[in-house]
Image (cartoon, one colour):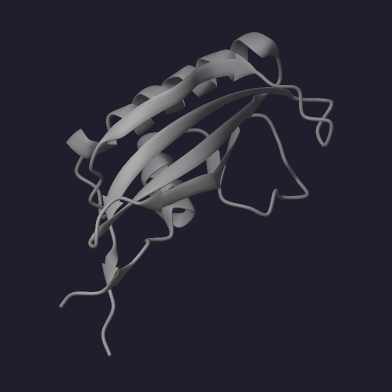
Length: 132
C-alpha cells in the first residue's frame, strides 16, 4: 500500500509562480517586513484529502502594488498563471485547478501604503510518497 502526505503547496506555488512571473517576488508566510509593490503572497487557507494519493488545497493569493490598477493587473496575471499550472512544465505535478474567487480589491491594514488584490484557488495535487 502506498501512503502519501500532502505537498507543501505554499512552497510549490512560491517556486512555480515566481518562475513564471518576472519583476516580482513571490513568497509564502510569514509576510516579509520589507513588503513592497509587486510582491505576491501565497497562503494555504484550507483543503482536504481527494483520494488515498492526492489532496485538494485551497489557497489565497495576495498581490501588492503601488496603486489599485497595478495591483489588479498583477493579480489578473497571477490568476491566469495559477489557472494554467496543469498545462505548464513545472517540478510540481498539478491536477485540476479552479479559481474560486477572481481578483478583488482587499485592503491590507498591515500595508496601508500599498494596494492589494486577492484571489482564491482550489488546486488538486498528488501527495508525496512516504517511506517507512
